[in-house]
Length: 458
Image 1 (tube, rainbow, N blue to C red):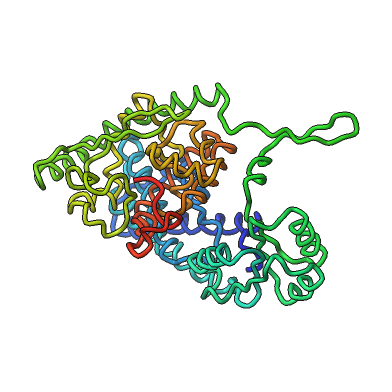
Image 2 (cartoon, rainbow, N blue to C red; image 1 turned 30 degrees about the vertical axis):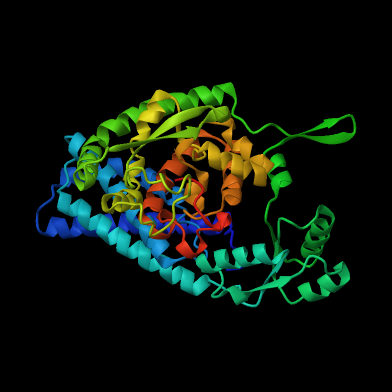
């Protein structure tokens, strides 16, 4: 594959094949069921009427979980996303079968169809990747500092874009443009670091376009400022309007209404899970069930975040404020499970209902760490221009150990590009984070003293 961003035509073709697989799976299931006379013909006719809605849900989930973007990715990542996608389709179809009297398929038929859909979709996607993928090995180069090069190489390896970190060469930014151009002739893919100055960046981009090479720019803060900006003219001069990082009043009202409705429903649905979690926390050491801690909210207004207690009582009595890490001996046995499954976050639905938080937004930080991060990056405070969230853009796209600076970029991008659709997408993608062990766990103890490698929020 010549691009880590697949073309719309390729993505449409992939979705089309997925839909045909789902249709084929149901057809085969109906044929098998009909042979054993476990399904009536009128039920098949009713399902045909409902099938467009099943497909609509399928297309929505495929796009949401990016199963149409078959770049070189981890096969386990595809498995996780297919499980959630097919699982939601199964729930939707089963619910329709239950609520509509004229449509009553046996659960065995629905289960067979979705199991077959999962197996066939997984098989065809893996075959597609194997046939069309083209490794970046020895064809990609990074221009910038060594630290960012290492980070980019690790990310490309984790995404299966390259097989090892040596697959991404590096050229220093201080090399003259003439020598740089000579070295770039050997590569097809050019990654430009965020520390490269504007003049050099423009020269590299001009060269890449002239030579028909693909270029990828790692954004700096200036790039984030002008994202989704309005372009107009004053006389014969073109100007770009750079807006502050905030939401409009209309967006805030809509977001608040959705928060109230969804958080109330989720509190009802998850009540049994929370009661069981509370029981396990209480039985382990007889300590308090809930953990309250002051965090910084919108416009740095403090509030108390509510979680299930996952650490020993008075965990920071001796250490003071410290960030969590993997294999932290302060985490209880029940707490380890609650953290891994993110059940410890469920009480925050009450924070959302109360108005301190939103379902989606930057994760709330403690004042101690907020001041520390602001000293390192003055732009960090702008992430507090909106209400903090239970989940966020940084949580679904980054990892548990993504550095505060990189999480900040995700958060500012979210604020700049906010929409109801983006919130819905993030909520669905949060399910994948829960299933992905590498995204749900804390950092390595060996790196716990390096702030850039630790978790940005407890």
